[in-house]
Image (cartoon, rainbow over the protein chains, first blue to last red):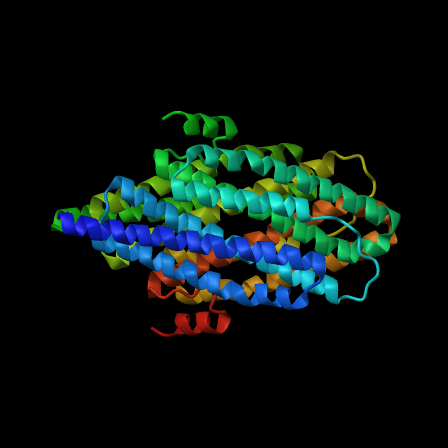
Length: 233
Length: 233
């Protein structure tokens, strides 16, 4: 590459990274808004979350396209190519987090629109905050190529899973005491499941960051290995 | 590219496609085995499904790597690049289908190991067969670049979703009649959810096939658009 081409390439790559972070910010907002509106019963806000999802889908398509373009035009070498390939994977996970936020909003709408009095009182906020925190940290790790932040996200995924199991236990107790809560209980269960999946996707993003930095694929290798990869420079 | 390089490239591309199909076949087997063993209570078979999952994970990593290598070495042009990028996405979905099969096997083990008599009798086989059929068709569509088969998969996803809703309704009835079935009922619910997700992933694969063939991204565009894309040559 000439110096000019190389600068142009750097610029395009930076622009892709920036847009990934914007997409991540939007996705984070969608979850936070859905969870807030679940608590307050703000149906307008829930409707907005559902409406906004297509913008995230669009961003994914645009970024996918930008990645194909940059590879075709610039023919990046190993390191940069790894970055682009990681972006392709990261945005898939971000888009699916967006889908989960939309699902939470939809189920929450149904919950608040139903006239059923038999709603088990189960708090999802703690689990949701954990998942949002994981996503934020994963995006930070992506922005700063910060391996230890990425490893922290992988670790946190266990907390979200534990929260999720706690929610299931609560639900079982509610339904045993009053079976009429089962219908709305299932809605809450699937909202909790959506939160757990958001944690999974954030973990995936974190693992791609480690791959970007290390060129070492840590997926499916377990936490100990990931921490080892994060701590060796 | 010289003729020799071009032939070499064709050969490598073909090898990647073949391995994607092998991976797909393994994943399909995993689901079928988990569902069969859920019905028969064959704990050894369930254990095998759990054990085999790492082979699918490994295939994903190998194929990801092969894709990065081929792009770096051969610098493919637009069409071929699109194929490689689609493969990167397809194998992510296949790997996650593998995860769902593993989850089904794990929950099924728990179900059969529990001494609870309060197991709601809900049939998952029909939904599972639909999802397996979708996956098989999506892989066929990938192998033959068959757009109309791909569109058919997208259409079938609605059937799986409908099956899933039916299962939820059955579960509610069981639990209302006997709340003691809630615990095992939730296991069955999450198995049904896993099947529904397998359908979603198969649909994703089908949409990537349409993208490969048409260079037209049909994700998030709705069924009518997908059928239009499939029918215009």
